[in-house]
Length: 71
Image (cartoon, rainbow, N blue to C red; front, side, top):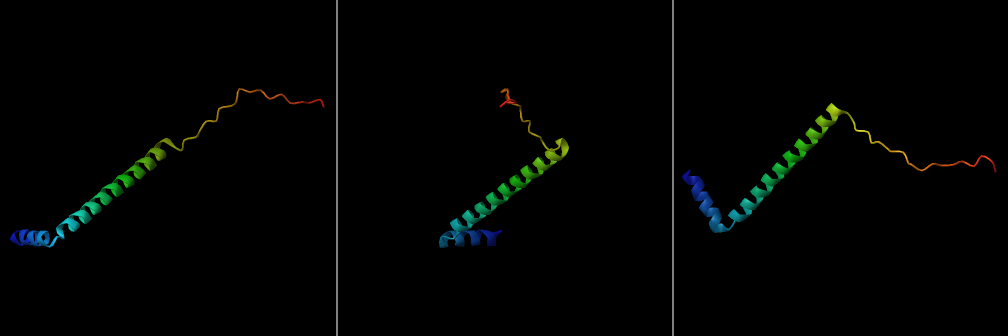
């Protein structure tokens, strides 16, 4: 424990501690975003497997097309 505190103080004196903290926060943020993205992908795939692929309904037009049979 004392070695850890001495190392922390040494890094703070040298000015490297800020860089190490920034890198650690970046890595932690990347891991959190990666886990969230993988979780969303898995949830989407499970939901799609349970419900099946959604088919979009194309509603017909209300416009009536009159063909000219006699020209």
